[in-house]
Length: 331
Image (cartoon, rainbow, N blue to C red):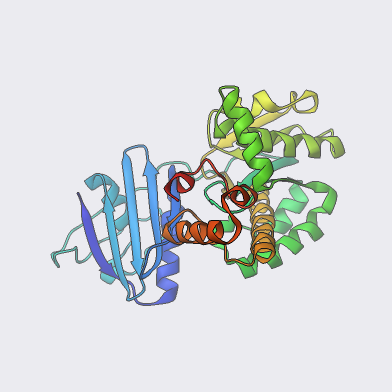
């Protein structure tokens, strides 16, 4: 298994490399919790899988299923382990054994930014990979004018922002676009579990449930803005998933789906709204039951789930968690 080890000591360099990884085109990342790590990212690409572990002591450990995918990650590092700007050729110094290697990476894949003009609805979700908490889908309608303002304010993919910045950005988004240009579809754990079971019983899967959320957010905004004729969503499955869930108002729109759709400021704004509402709801659930509810689906989440069951009983788990996760069967 191809692997490499580096040293990133500065917090800024660690965060910069994490963001560079998450910006890689056509790569889906899942962040997991691991002991002694600032972060662990597991990625899926068309050619296989990737993994990055940034230990708190500064050690950066990279591994992948193929040499090409390892080169793709290490190509984001310049000489002496410094983080290079994405989409540039880079020279890699010092592999796992201390020997030198040369890696040339050309980012020729699309970034996700679409050439969409005029008013559109951007949609995104939060909580899909989190065992605890709701699934939240948000839609934000932007015009050329409001999109330019949001871009100037620094609105970007919520995964690149801290929770503190997300809170501030959320308020700015509402001020710029107006509350009527924001739609939020929040599926609390209990409702989520009911919907998931209903979709499963009819032969559908999680992508159909996600599509229902995105379509509902779009439909809600089209009620207030019937002249809007286009929408952008992240590529979580075949576009027919969303199209099949749209009703009369949405049948006439042009739907654009692309990987890394958060590169479009309307989708980025939706990701911030969804994340803000998700974390807020998670905090409310934690306060209600008097227990910490961690993000993700890693070991800390499993431990918290066991503690929750001990304190409140297994039936109550449906009020705080997405039961179809394998975490439930492991309790």
